[in-house]
Image 1 (cartoon, rainbow, N blue to C red):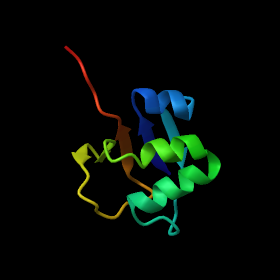
Image 2 (cartoon, helix red, strand yellow; image 1 turned 180 degrees about the vertical axis):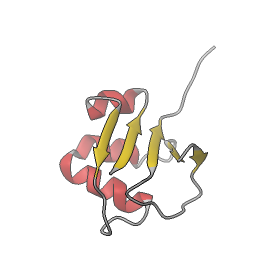
Image 3 (tube, helix red, strand yellow; image 1 turned 135 degrees about the vertical axis):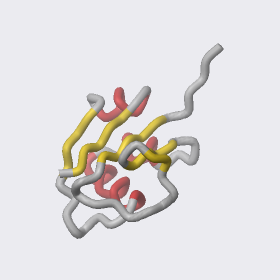
Image 4 (cartoon, rainbow, N blue to C red; image 1 turned 135 degrees about the horizontal axis):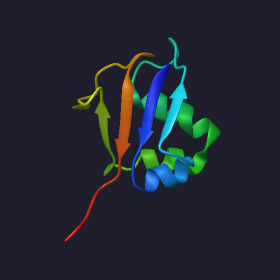
Length: 82
């Protein structure tokens, strides 16, 4: 199972910081993963589609590579601070 992590306001929308999700062969990339998540939660799906959301796959910044059921995928909203 893929481990999906949500940070900041995305965790609030997801109802928690982590989900385990069996993505199998039907999900091959991040766009398809977000589409799958959006089927169950429109608001979270819309938030994940925002251009400002960064994605980390297996502790590396995503460059659009394929994903698999054994990956850890983290979604991070933009951060601000002072």
